[in-house]
Image (cartoon, rainbow, N blue to C red; front, side, top):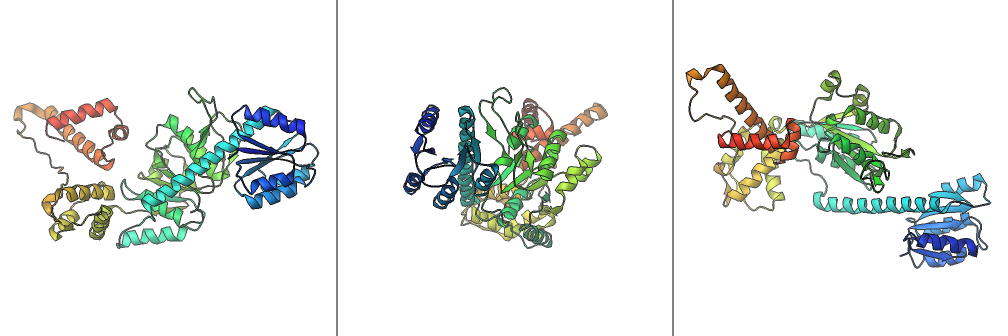
Length: 450
């Protein structure tokens, strides 16, 4: 497959284009008439077509119409030395990607072609990722019959077909990304990309590059242009998870995207227009962050057009058994679970919510024989008892230090469980260095507190 087809009747100009572009590594086919182009398009596929507006046998605009009927995926660039602005506008309305006025600088053409090829590559990669995600996730199933989850699901079904910005509120592990994926699949954008990004998992200095992309040379190490998540998600949905962790500078840029649907890449000067729907999620009370001046009030109101609160598992205990059966089915398990084991699960408050329940059932499924029994369910015990009682002579300072260690150990344990054991993310969440976290884990494990 050739990358580019040149449709140009002037021999000298056509040869110059072919030779110049082939020197860059782009593969080229060159034809001198519209008729030859039509025949070739029926046999071969091209990423880009360069069409001279004036050809000996067919008008360039008419040729564009016919070629787009054959292959809707090819991007066309019009070349003209004679056409009026009205002719160029007509070509753009018919779907031409861009136009160049002769004589043009060959470097300008090469830059344009590379941009088109890169954008198409990203588009294909997203299609593959989207198809793969569907194989993995299928249609997102929101499991439960409790009043709280039914109410949240009903709200989701109402807002999904609209283009409204949605704000999902709930504790870690409640299934906010599951809701976001369901909202996307129930929307009119379902055939386009769903692009999730965890704002808490990427350092702020890298997050802007992830969201908006960067131009070559924008910063040290930027050897090539990078396409950001918003650009990749064009016509689809961007899911901004843990948006409460964004710094104020990035909040301002997200606000601009929501208001104008435009942004610039890092190091760029050209405004890029996109058409995306934004779904945001937070496990923090954004209203409180607004009062503390940690979250922009204008962005908060933009995001909270349609808030949906996803209930924690402790408020929907009647769903525990259904969720357990669903998790076992996902694990392809043939094991059953005893009534006593279900009662043990329902007595627990689940600080890590459904994510913690999934981990617990996966462990129990490995441990159990034919039926999961209460003893197969390993739940964290937060009542930590010192092997030796505190000596009365130790005083309040020692007691206070020991109490602090217990509290720290409990918080570390809970955070690691919520994050699936991810120590790097736990260190960031707990606001300590990775080395400090490892030292605390070692110390408290040795003392029996972890």
